[in-house]
Image (tube, rainbow, N blue to C red; front, side):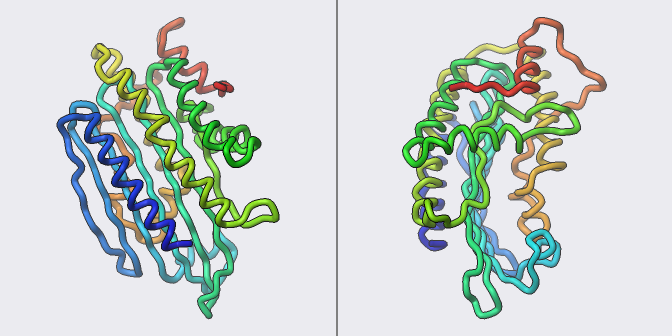
Amino acid sequence: MKTKFYTYIQNLQDRICDKLEAIDGTAKFREDLWDRTEGGGGRTRVIENGKVFEKGGVNISGVHGALPESMQSYFGVKDANFFACGLSLVLHPKNPMVPTVHANWRYFEMYDQDGNIVDQWFGGGQDLTPFYLFDEDARHFHQVCKTACDKHDESFYPHYKNRCDTYFYNTHRNESRGIGGLFFDYCKKTDAMSMQDWYDFVTEVGDSFLDAYAPIVEKRKDLPYTETQRNWQEIRRGRYVEFNLVHDKGTLFGLKTNGRIESILMSLPPHVQWVYDHHPAPGSAEEKLLEVLQNPVDWV
């Protein structure tokens, strides 16, 4: 399973990067291959200063070895070994009318001292963070997510949509990071779902990503915007940074397993603002966004 899934994310990385370069039209991904001292490594691809994408990363990794003590405590195990692989992407477009997007699809195995698998699961999801809310874009993104889920179990979309709304939430701000999508974790073998079934589901979602995001970028990337709107984008990016550094489990896992710091923090945008006690004007498009972030919407 780990070999099959790692091959899948390698191919998915190629497909996503090819499409994003075509959309941008000027910038190309820079590729860095890296090794982890304790075992494994990855392939980081970053795009910067493009016509469409100000900064973005589409990264894959496969790491293995002894589970660090900090993670042993987290999982409640001792002297365990692990393997983890996944694709993680974040894209920060230049135009504030185009939403930021994040996605991740991952697989984890844990072993006893004899090398036997004692636990394994899939996780992942995809979520949208707009700066200016276009309802039709939100509906499109969520409909693609729902269609992918419904092919496997019609209960998946409402469950994983709710998980996404709950997870990507800045509790210290009392607002969501964005308008959600899907979030699933610890997808393990059950009577109803084999590991192959979970593989089929996760790869279905992975394959749906470009269908969910690319049409939105194409529709919004050439819209005009003002300096005031750009400032709002950078203020909202600050909330994105706060979530990733305070709450995100993936960032925490990478930092505690001696992951590559440049790859872990590639999710941070290049230009951000923190404005003291900032409040948007009453009745503005900016205020409309905040209302939705404070009260998650059922888009489909």
